[in-house]
Image (cartoon, rainbow, N blue to C red):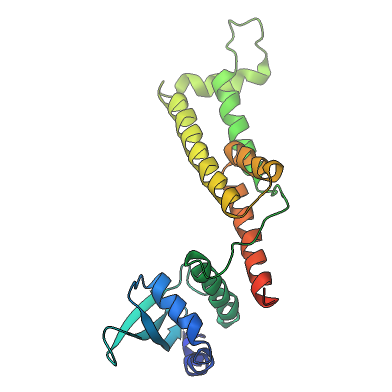
Length: 221
């Protein structure tokens, strides 16, 4: 099966030749080139990545070639523009060329129901009373039965892993909240819900930040 992006590589390379500043930002950020890059060209692009050549002030006319992979790979030609635009914004923001967009809203994604269900199941299995308890009923029988056949380290380890991962994710979200100038209430909503529900909150936040970045670029701000 032919690569739909590679089939239009020539056109895309010609189009990107009109955006040398963007190509330089790709080289410096994604290629991790710290030298003074004075020129960059796209020589090929496909669904898995793009090939660029660049010149630095120190090396004169000598061109160096690098390959920048797409993660994840492009699903088709229609993803080229939004991916390249998103990469441009990420690169320029990382290098301090543009300001990080301010996040002023909070949104709780529906995917948190998955995390909440898993947490509820863990809570139920951990604390379901046994037959000798005054609070026991048949509702708790599956949870107690499962707990009785699990090795004793499984449930404490599950709680420890969940709390550790969610704590690290909450710290990451706190850093993002500061970077994107969230006010206290919006920032704390993101941090607390990330601690409670984990990655779905981060994923949704990233998508909204990316949309704000692209919107800012498209408006020329």
